Amino acid sequence: MKEVKERIEQHIEELSKYTATPGNGTTRLSYSQEDLQARNYIKQQMQASGLTVHEDGLGNIFGKLEGTIQGAPSVMVGSHFDSVPNGGSYDGPAGVVAALTVAELFHKHNLKPKYPLEIVALVEEEGSRFGGGLMGSRGMTGLLSEEEFNRLTDKDGVSPEEAMRKIGLDSSLPKRRDPKTMKAFLELHIEQGPILEEKNIPIGVVEAIVGLTQYQVTVKGKAGHAGTTPMDRRTDALVAAAKIISQLPELAIKEGNGTVLTTGRLNVYPNGANVIPDKVVFTVDIRSGKEDNVQNVIKNMQELLHAHNKPGSEIVAEQLLYIPPKELNPGIRQLLKEMSNQIDIPYCSINSGAGHDAMVFSDYTDVGMLFIPSKAGLSHCPEEWSDASHIAQAVGIFYEVAKKLTEVES
Figure 1 (cartoon, rainbow, N blue to C red):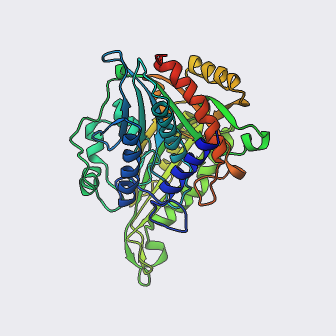
Figure 2: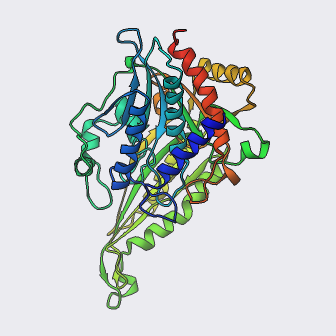
């Protein structure tokens, strides 16, 4: 366990270096130079464990240990390696590092599986560059079509294809993956909440993942001079957007049942101190454990937007992402619990309030997910931290589960 823990710490420390904001958290946007640096490191580690490495047309990374059964589906282990701006070193990378460590253990013990073991490092889970989120897994499963992928741009108007080409990736490679090639998907993630730490339990076996939707709302007004346009003749997009945004949280509060709503991104145009804003674009993120609650808030939000649609202005809401609540595979959950008991690691059942690639894959293959504690429940900030010993315990469980699922030959 000590050797595994030290190896995990080395991986986390190395990946944390690849940030656009040194000293102020991890900022690693998809297809950036920091992405390229992390990508090269991940591929090198995969190769060192004897895996055959390739990337798809989304830039997802795969390292495969072939099985003895010709054409058999893979047992996949992994997570994402992008970040939010000024995030932490564990959200995503902890899962990638756990997967790499499982592969290292297979390599060290010269295990020969019947079903392939495949380590996966996914792009753009956070949606920090191109919006929506979960792009790597949605593209793999066909939930994000080629046409939708080609329409995406970042805040500077750069398309994924352009950004990929800049770091040497080929977006013309196949993106969609046949579900028949996937036997199971295992993902480790930090909890991003306080429950496990407060209970002093190192492992959470995820039972279900919250449903979520994301909208992009565009409010259009009319630009004008800040000094010469009378107040009663203005169509100020920012004032209209501010009124809407201030009323949105109440929709989630009234809905209750743990429903939450967040306005996380706001862009003002033309963004001049002496110009009346003519356009504002902001995001709305709605989450709940029950699909009815999400749908009710969407309906109420649309009514609110309609009420603010005044003459001379225009308000448009575009749905970027919709994923209903997902229960994870009962058989994999039971296997995770059995292996935890077998190697004497305490665990509890837990639900996820955050979205993960695992929820996307759950409609296409058998999915299992583990959480480890987050210090003070913090995430998406530089202070984010999880204990490498907890990651090592999760690796121990995944190692045993992966051996069983790949039917390792003795």
